[in-house]
Image (tube, rainbow, N blue to C red):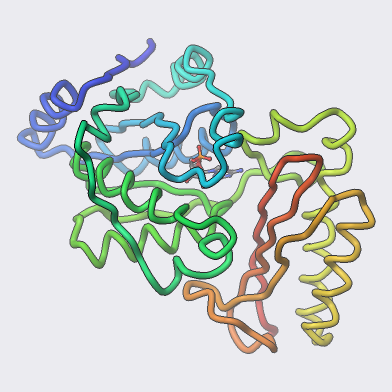
Length: 284
Ligand code: AMP
């Protein structure tokens, strides 16, 4: 059965208040729609970890620093509702824009630290937009727990920090990245890749996996990263914005593999910006 689509926060809160009174654990999976198996893996985890599950679908204008990216972002609400049907979630919250940003809205939630590097530096205002909408979605849904993907590893750290810093009362749970068979991380933006670009796209993850192996084997980090970037560009990407090794969690720079780490990358392929990340583990 398809879950009810709710568009107004008062209607949502009528439900969540009743669930709270009944002592149910409320879970939320925030998305921007164009749902794929990555999103659905979060829904599956949420169903196992909460009594009531709300999936939110909101293409948040405040987190897009590029107006063209916002305009081109895929919107597939009917399909999304169909894909959610087998999961029997309790509500699909697709807020009308004024339910998130009413007339006169002037508040921005802004983080320093982990939000200021990589995606934060490459996309000015992006994490302010994410933090602002996530704060609103957590408070509107009154969620006890929220599920986010490691695909957006930095976002996962930002949201974890945000919830702790502002006592939002929502526990943030991270889930592994779901990939195509050829290694490409599932992403709503993959829909925007041409057939030719789609063939080249797995080169990003392939180069990162090779770099991971070399770094874990003790090779010099800076050289491995330079070569990985070159490899991605030679495979047909237009530009690698960054391909770096950072400390897991804090994303502090790392010259040598001295603890649990992540490789993180952003690269442009035929007008589409792809990001990816994988864990790098030092030998015991
Ligand atoms: P988005 O709709 O792109 O804002 O993503 C909504 C949520 O789904 C975020 O927590 C993402 O990290 C997560 N997500 C997106 N792609 C994947 C994936 N391939 N595997 C796991 N989670 C993902």
